[in-house]
Image (tube, rainbow, N blue to C red; front, top):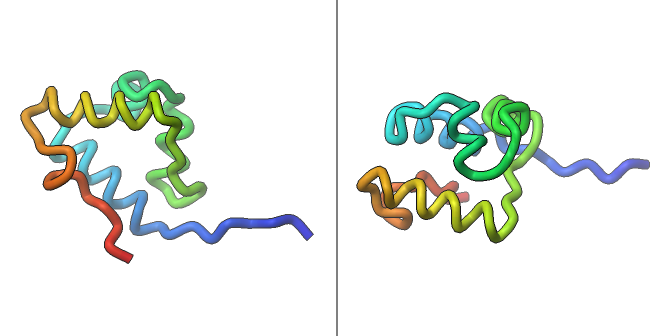
Length: 81
């Protein structure tokens, strides 16, 4: 039997809302900024897969958030569960 991770669709919704409302970015622009593909962002936002980031992608995300005048800790929508 294949090992399937459970996906929390709320994570994708939080990410999409943050990308659109706070960063004002398209999926394509966001993907390029953090070093992944638009299709990956689509899968994350639509609950197909759970976001997983490499260390360089985490750094890019923190830089992107900071460059938009946001605080990476206070303004990023972490899943509280």
